[in-house]
Amino acid sequence: MSVVTTFTQEQVIQRAVQEIQSELAACQPKVVLYFASSSYNPQEIAHNMEQAFPGATVFGCTTSGELISGKMSKNSIVAMGFTSDIIGDINIQIVQKISTEDHVQEVFKGFEDYYHTPALELDPEKYVGIVICDGLTKAEEKIIDSIGNLTNVTFIGGSAGDDLKFASTYVFANGQAYSNAALLALLKPISKFDFIKTQSFNPTNKALVATKVDEANRVVIEFDHKPAVEAYAEAIGHSVDSVGNGFMSHPLGLMIDDEPYVRSPQQVNDGAITFYCNVKEGMEMSVLESTDIIADTTAVIEEKQAEVGSIKAIVNFNCILRTLQLDSQGTSEQYGKIFTHIPTIGFSTYGEAYIGHINQTATMLIFF
Image: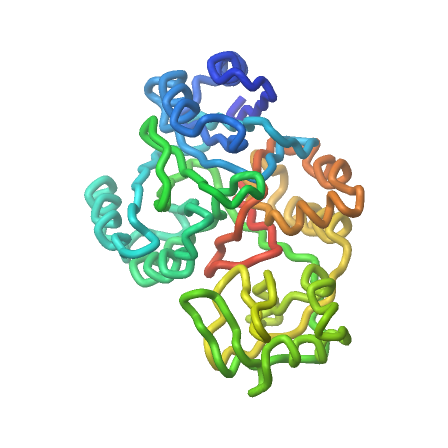
């Protein structure tokens, strides 16, 4: 098989890695991608996974929940092995100190040296990127903007989690666990590839303009020249005191080609609202209303299958807020079953990457 998936809930790291190794060994993977709960020691899991697959490129991150074909999981490790029939070549670069510095251009020199091609000349039909950031740095926008300035290749991904502890998240590569870092993987697949971005919201006829913003801290101080919480509460039909109850079902969306790129509110701070990703001053956003995650995701997968034929693999970067919503609705099992017949791994992220940094979205890399 060209793609093999496996998972384990064994908590002893050596035994857990042995289980994964035994399941993936038969396909002799060229690339191993894995997502591991923060219940595992990050340095140990990174070292052991690297040692288990000599000759393969091994990378991943910590999570806030995992996804494997047919099942959503917690406190586990999920892994996908790709043969050279799917991925012809891959190069991994680590960007460090991302909370305070920007070294993306430097690591792109590494990509250029590896592929012997200037980054702007890389063909986006032949190359694809994966980006995974430390999910606690608030640096995702800076990283993704820098990538977009350097290449036309699409980078898709998500931010590492830590099971909602909000203490420390890690990316894994080279047998090491890195914090305050972003992992960039530049792939040259043999297989065809495509993308899915799906969010379960529709725009309403209401919009808000951010007129005063603390962008560095992702705080909107005013919408439409009013205290942000007052304007937002009025737009969603809540009182100021109960406005937090509307955060999950009524985030805001930057509309691009009639598609919302979601900005989710996190908390109220003295009349201001902190968001899970940046809102720029002057940005106009639609107030969104939630729809059905199960129905929407099922439809978009079926639509993509009809478009491309049989899907060989999916890597799903699924927002933790979507996972929490599924849990609260008792529909997590249904969500996992959407992917029963497609080799899939994924994880619950602290933000998603596709063109920009977004929230309450699933961004998926598919191979077909």
